[in-house]
Length: 96
Image 1 (cartoon, rainbow, N blue to C red):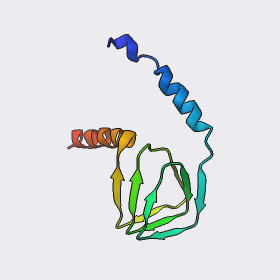
Image 2 (image 1 turned 120 degrees about the horizontal axis):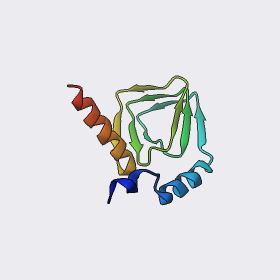
Image 3 (image 1 turned 30 degrees about the horizontal axis):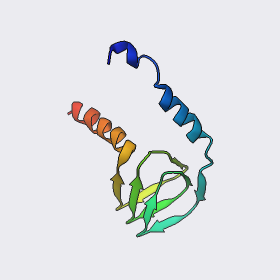
Image 4 (image 1 turned 135 degrees about the vertical axis):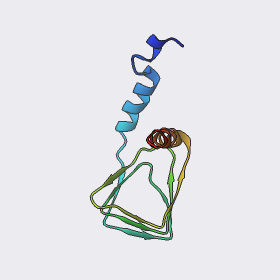
């Protein structure tokens, strides 16, 4: 792959993202989840609290708005979302 190959978005990714933007997320408002498995993808959470939950993220296609609290939760991040997590880890380690 040459440098010029990365100067524009990949058309397949652009098409896929456009299709994903058409999806209407399920909205959950003002709810407290306690000791639940919670799958974030495809949902919009507003003013929610998560206590002792297992949080699953695969695509990273979710919304968190308002006041969101995570208390003693674990996160299971896989698939494409793990790519974002890994680059954030790398950036955090560069500051050390």
